[in-house]
Image (cartoon, rainbow, N blue to C red):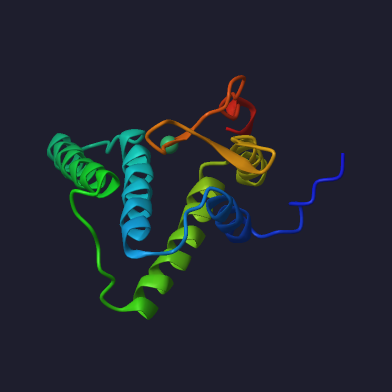
Length: 154
Ligand SMILES: [Mg+2]
């Protein structure tokens, strides 16, 4: 099957998806998206254990719990962010993608295939190019939508 997304970068696929969902760049959506980003980073931390030091592990868990609280407040609009230095911020975002890919490589994971599945299932949240919205305006998962299976990529 021809996939019109196959030559797009992950960034363009994501920005196209957000635009289709009516999420234009503004301060409120930036804060919400940063909350989502922090939440995913904390989900990474939830899935590792620091071996050899109980107190390091406790510190990491405590830090993650506190950052999850901030992420929730960003997602609900209770707080917001302001970028201090846009160039340094973009550099950190790009480097974070590089290091994340490096972690997947070092963990022997098939991130290329996992990325394809995650982005494809994200696209499947759109019905005829439009998001399914709740009465409150939240993007919903359409009936029959299933989360990507990554069991054979690990
Ligand atoms: Mg997640």
